[in-house]
Image 1: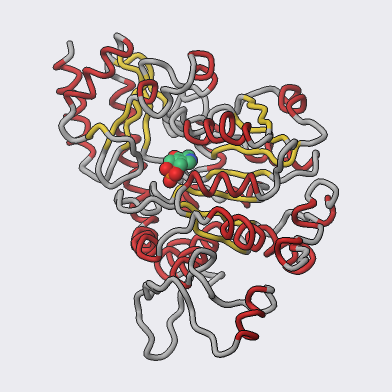
Image 2: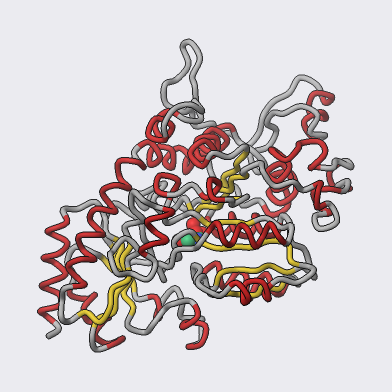
Length: 428
Ligand SMILES: *Cc1c(COP(=O)(O)O)cnc(C)c1O
């Protein structure tokens, strides 16, 4: 499977049925698994043999779908989580403990910003946020001796900035820490961060991967490239024996390729239990089968809508990285030559009030806390997903009061444009 192109991996990756086995992936709707002897079971607990014993830790359906996403990203190991939030939390908490520090891009998803700046701060982990287009000096100055990771989004939700992955990977590696990239908006169809030096990739599979607004989920993929043992002093959790897991040293026993995901499963999933259900994983896999077909159409529709908005005199500004003239156009061309995503952000002249009135007149795009669905939807982040932020934080996150986030679905582009035109007419 590894030699096939990404479209083939979308359809067939992760699962190769044997003779007479089901063509579609089986939904293993079982919390537990049976063994003949306690000794057999004991070996599983010791991670001496691989196998299933309890679906909070691992389930065959979820593993099959994780293997497909792993293949799409070009990684060595992957796990599904119950949500994108859980994926980002686990990815960071797997290597950063109390009294540690993480450098993160300031233009990240509002939920992630809150997780980092409020909840994980309470756990004793400090974050320094830097603008994705900060100077090399600013980026360098953000690091501390106790920095354990760098975090950013390929395309930020909803600011639509594009991260210079190579530059952030270089800075992270100079400080002997991994770069974690949330690749939700680009998907591996449009960008594979490992090819640019990222070490860990996360996803909210809730978005384009599922693609139909049917299941909340997340995923973590390891590139298998980061050498934990070479930086053992920084990563004791991976490089010293885990007393809570029979004295296993993950980096020694599972190598660069498997240590990160094995630890996240054996420790974090065991203790926090943010598992994806096999039913949801099955639905996610249906979405993945058509991901490559859908992404192209999402991008085509979004570009047409962005061009229309740009030419409209009631629109103050448009942000879409695939639109010529966008500040992130060159970065988008470099990292995502085939297209970016289906989400367009823009400002309606007249500010917050006009933005809200405009959204109320749209007939196709519904007002939803969502993006990346087959059906178009829109949101006013300043009064919803980002409402916990103060003005300063909003500005740093790239969210202005007039910002409308429009997620272009798979409808006809001309219908979307005509609907936007009539809504703008209605608020004249
Ligand atoms: C939605 C989103 C998340 C959070 O994912 P959930 O599945 O909603 O928990 C994280 N990162 C990005 C970029 C997102 O768009």
